Length: 182
Image (cartoon, one colour):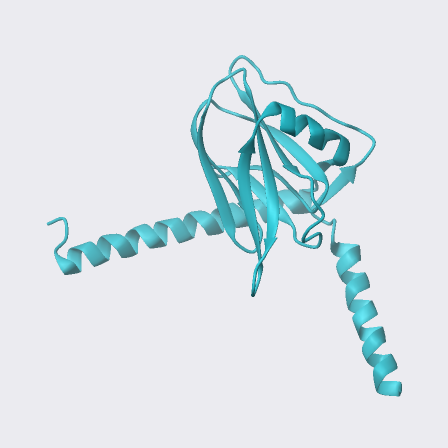
């Protein structure tokens, strides 16, 4: 009985510690429905995470390497993005992206969803229209990254850049050793 009690106490302590640190990367305001406005030289991008599936999994969103926001379930955030072609991507235990050409003065909406997998949860990022996005405002609280969240986002973006550069280098080396492209 003592071992069971100790094991339950350890699980409770671990889950309490996880819950206490769960929002260290952002704060969520359920009452404020903060909205952005596109400008004549920037596009406005919203990212929503309306479902509770995989509620413990944090998702991070970027436009190329520009941090947009971080949250768990039932949250949204937004950022101004320069016009042009961008890869909008979300990172959880995997990475999912959407390539899109955005125009200044326009608003774009993305939804992230967690899909439970065999070994880990997977994030999926998809573009949605304004009508669908409007439904999410009532379900979601506005998430604001903390300083710790911004620091962690920079680390995630740098890690992604490094992996992309490594993969490009490996491809180049492989094509040189196999004579492809020569």
